[in-house]
Length: 264
Ligand SMILES: Cc1cc2nc3c(=O)[nH]c(=O)nc-3n(C[C@H](O)[C@H](O)[C@H](O)COP(=O)(O)OP(=O)(O)OC[C@H]3O[C@@H](n4cnc5c(N)ncnc54)[C@H](O)[C@@H]3O)c2cc1C
Image (cartoon, rainbow, N blue to C red; front, side):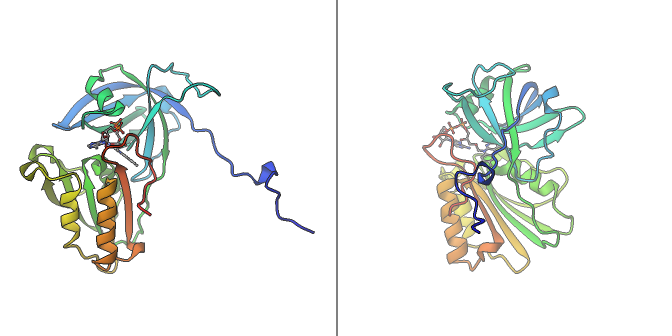
C-alpha cells in the first residue's frame, strides 16, 4: 500500500500559523546616542507576547492602520520592517525597540516623528539564536542596527563565556554598552574619521580574527559586508561553518531587506 501523502492532501501541507497582530502605542522615547532612538511601546495586546529568544525579531507594520486591522484578500499590504525586541516586560506589557536613525525609509522616518501615543502594529517574535551552554568564547561583529540584538544575546549568555565585540558605529558619540548585564571586551570601530563605508571596518577586523576551538562567531551588519566577512572568516581564517552565525540586517540601496539573509 502506498502511504506517501498525496500533494493535494491538506493534512500534508505545512501549517502556517497566522501571526498575532498586536496594536501598541509609544509610552516613552529616549535618545541613547545621536543615531539611536529607544522607543518603549505598551499595549494590553502584548499579553502573551514572547518571551523573545536572544537575537529574535519582530515585524512592525506602518501606516494609518486601525488597532484591530487584519489582512484581507485584495487589500494592499502595509509596509513592514524587521526590528529586535530589545526588552520585554510582561507585567507592564512594555516592549522596547531601539531604532537606528539612518535617514530615508519608512521606519527611520517614523521614529523621527514618533511621539508619546504614536501607534503601530507589531507581530512576532520569531527566529533567534540559542548558543551552546558550554560556549567558551563568543566573538561578535555588529554594526549599529545589530547592537540591540547583541544586547539580547549578551544578556542571556552564561557568565563563564568570554565575549569580544567588534562594534561599528558612525561617530564616537554613538558608542554605548549594549548590555547592562555583561561587561564585554568592546572594540569600537568608528566610521566618520575615515568616512569608511558601512561594514568596511568590521571586514578589516575580520582579516585579523581567529576563532579557537570552543569559540563561535556572530556577524550581523549590512548584507554585502556580511558576505565579505563570511568569505574571509571561512576561506582565509580557517573558521569552521559550524562556528559561525551570519545575518544581513539591511542592504545598501535596498528597502526592506528580508529577515533571514544568512549569506548562503
Ligand atoms: C533580524 C533583524 C533585526 C533587526 N533589528 C534592528 C533593530 O533592532 N534596530 C534597527 O535599527 N534595525 C534593525 N534591523 C535593520 C532594519 O530592519 C533595517 O535597517 C531596515 O531596512 C530599516 O527600515 P527603513 O524603513 O528605515 O529603511 P528601508 O526602507 O528598508 O531602506 C531605505 C534606505 O535606507 C538604507 N538603510 C536601511 N537600514 C539602514 C541602516 N541601518 N543604516 C544605513 N542605511 C540603512 C537602505 O539601504 C535603503 O537605501 C534588523 C534587521 C533584521 C533582519
